[in-house]
Length: 415
Image (cartoon, rainbow, N blue to C red; front, side):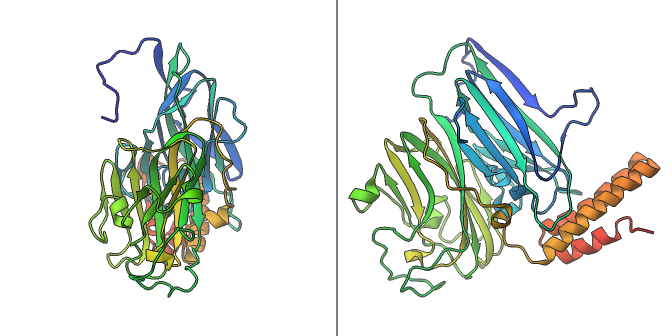
């Protein structure tokens, strides 16, 4: 089983939590974040282990899931072992939460009148000397300053003895190609049943790792720009320098749906312990899709290197927008990460009206805050205002920016 035997006692271990609880004893149990700000969520000394991460917001902006970036350093290393937009790390696809019920990540809805989701990650993150988690809130050019309430829990264990030999460190890396180039000589965005991909040179690459370790998860997102069934892409995983010395790789698949545990051409969402297609925007495959796979009982092990790649359409002839989050454990040091793109290159593809709706949301939120400060409304009135903002946020997340714009414009209009 994935979890340890709950009946077995562990000597020399103490459980504790770091969270955003209100140190004054009141109920303001959240951080207030401003664009451009970086905060330290934990800065702990070891030996120890992070066992669980949780966070949430309420009525957050349409871009928040890609604006927030989490970085993690273990044992005083110079470069982070985790660097990813916070939403993608917690299996939020294309900046739009969807329910996930898996062993490693869980995403649960909150009050249906507002936009609020509980995000959970259960992959263990051990450290011997130290652990530091930093959260950066990147500003979106052209958008007014937007403060955010951010709740979080980090459950940890502290040990008397150093970690056992062979304990690897947790890593997570975000990548995107927007869009991928179709393979030269192929017909773009058209099924290429007879194409021959020998070598995988034009595949999408989700991870290139150096060292000794094991890959344990992948969150893959596809914005299907070409239409039609975008899959058929085989995963080709090159282990221990295989790309330099042999073909085919020892770890070769048969198509996209097989990787993520689905039947042929999944066109409805599902979510399970190890696999899921948790985002399916349209049954005809148009638009945004996302899927996950946890290799918890069958990790992809490597001694020297690993390159996890996948075709984008059979023989790489689909020019779609691919985004991925790879999860793995390895002995340090790790290979340098690709530079994380700036915020505008991280944002999902949205209609232009979404920026207008986001600006209107920030302006409406400011008007509500000013009204509350000046009038001290009753709890019932304050709740009504909050739910009104929530209806606009729900419209934005449902892909209805024009409706959201109207709601935000009418929320406490200036007299």
